[in-house]
Length: 163
Image 1 (cartoon, one colour):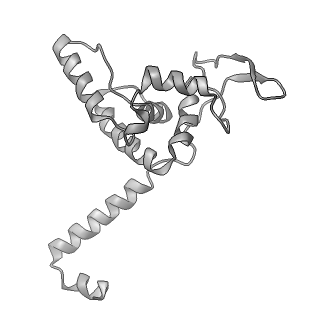
Image 2 (cartoon, rainbow, N blue to C red):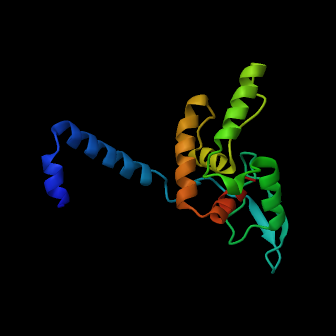
């Protein structure tokens, strides 16, 4: 069946809904910026084999290493162990970790645990906005989209920039 003829036969309401959903999907796909970070990187000194000899913290007190072609295995292990144990087993958002953190925080009536993944932390830092509850949904959406548009190891390189 010809899609144009099919579309013409739809009611006005269904046409509006179809166009709206299509525009939302297109917006969702193209909402990530090409360059995630617009902030200075730490000064890094390496030897001729690209082994780290030293680094300087950025003026805002953050360690942001320039992107590399590879991520050292020890850094990968540390990031995954301490920040996102299930990094290879979710799509950028871990609903179980978010639920666990929400439960613990409500139970203690204060923030005692976070449920963000490395992907979500990378997105939050790239957006460079204050951390709020209302910011959670966009970070979830961007997190899912980012993991879909960047391979897992490429994301690991972006996550390394957070150090």
